Image (cartoon, rainbow, N blue to C red; front, side, top):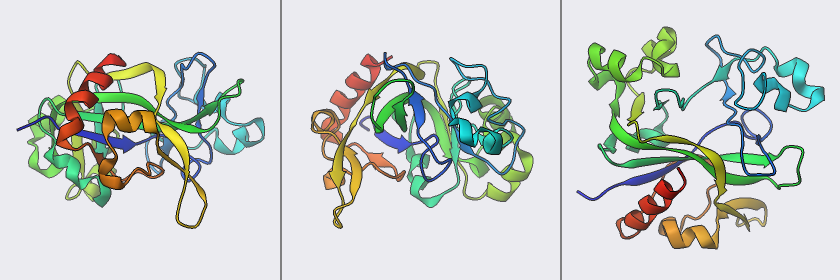
Length: 237
């Protein structure tokens, strides 16, 4: 079976969190998670890679309101796990060892003039994937003990039947520098939206004509483009 490559949007955005994450002049960036309803990590107590705490990237006028908001730190890049119980991500259960799950996020220049755009921020070389309910307790502990959905037991119990879990191998990466993949397009009503840029279509193909990457449904790379896509992804490490 040929290698599969899937693209998934993650991280804070206008619809979930109210802003884009920060990207700096040299294309380094911070991955800022979306808000959560459960957990113990907040924007005010969680350090960033380049900051004392993630709250420092919020506009000054919004810091007090967001400082104590819980965060949904998923995917996580310490042990490379990702979980999602929603139907648009259900297909990720079919990922096999050696496949690639590529994460992209919305970023905007922080103390620089980079415009809002979508960027590849990380990828998993898949080790295992599937429904949480199909993993043994031992394997859940072995592979997914650091995942948000698994370590928050009340969340896990509620989502068990629908939760998809993906574990990345040691070859997985949170990138040091983000790679822009979007260009500005328009929907049928003429409203602006992010689409896969022409240069990235040469790498990933046209996603079966669905070049809009504004939202988070999984985008699967067609088999004729997977080899080029994998080579490109690995070059970003």
